[in-house]
Image 1 (spheres, each protein chain N blue to C red):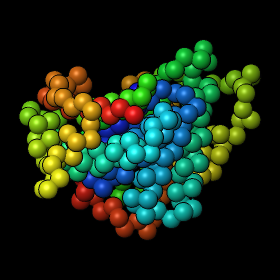
Image 2 (image 1 turned 90 degrees about the horizontal axis):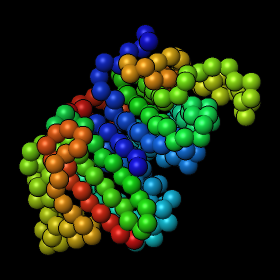
Image 3 (image 1 turned 180 degrees about the vertical axis):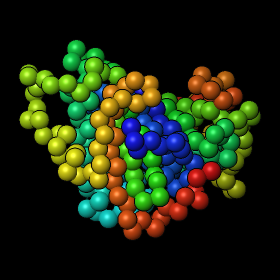
Length: 122
Length: 145
């Protein structure tokens, strides 16, 4: 499992995308699902910072047995739901719901109030 | 440590100290370099030094082949990038049976503006490196929130 904490700002999206792409590549993820995962990362990096507690995006990523699990932690109370709402693109729908095979909100294990958990199978 | 960084790091990575994970750290710093539009030579120096420090953790920190943690922090200051690579191993000590050539730390010292070997606030072994970031326009500090 790889854990990241990224300051909200211009580094969050590129670093998150690079790290997730490396983890998935090593797990033999096919290109189409890798592309989907990067779409998720872009959406997370774009919308989650507005709902973090201390200005840092906390993410853990793990990939094994044909599945990637991405946990966005340390979100404010109701923040995970807000991230989901923010990910709606007019005419397209909710990007996160369309791409992820499993999507749920859990109480945070590492601090904060909410944790958004996304799973992508490949 | 004299180069104390009071502000929270801009990037923190924590992952098992395995050889394949050094590539993840390297790619993360590659993304940082692209986002900041660093000069190729500056980025190459940073990547090489960080790779050496992480490799040292993989090779030396956990001699019983356990997957202890490798933690990397990067903090952007006004004119420098401070990178701290830490582990929970026994510390930096002479190792007669070392599988390496012993070039890692001298190489880091030649690439970084400053290097400090010691322990972080949690007592973990730490290599802290600072790299000058002259000419970086992309980071003005206002992006911190």
